[in-house]
Length: 107
Ligand SMILES: [Zn+2]
Image 1 (cartoon, rainbow, N blue to C red):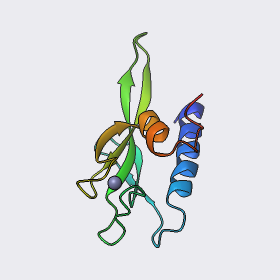
Image 2 (cartoon, rainbow, N blue to C red; image 1 turned 180 degrees about the vertical axis):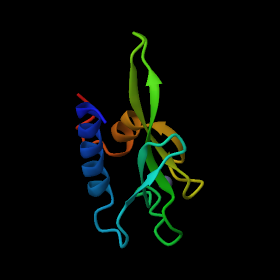
Image 3 (tube, rainbow, N blue to C red; image 1 turned 45 degrees about the horizontal axis):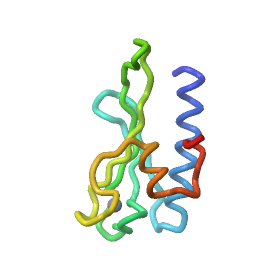
Image 4 (cartoon, rainbow, N blue to C red; image 1 turned 90 degrees about the vertical axis):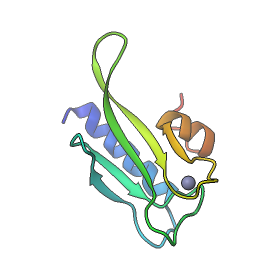
């Protein structure tokens, strides 16, 4: 794992801790189908606490326009169907839209 990716994991781990603060169960890490570590937790937008961990933040290796590979992070809520955050979003988008006070991702 490169230094940059380790830093991303660290920052995103902190972000997950903040958005799940006060929930009865802590977030946990899981392994994605392509072998990266993601975070699984109760979506703080729909507050889907009783029915288990229904939101994930996970990376996918993506090729940039300049041809280099980087990890692109996503926010996926599979909780309540009416959740504002339901579905798949880029993490940058999700932070800007749903967690605007948490701005590490947004310059
Ligand atoms: Zn949700």
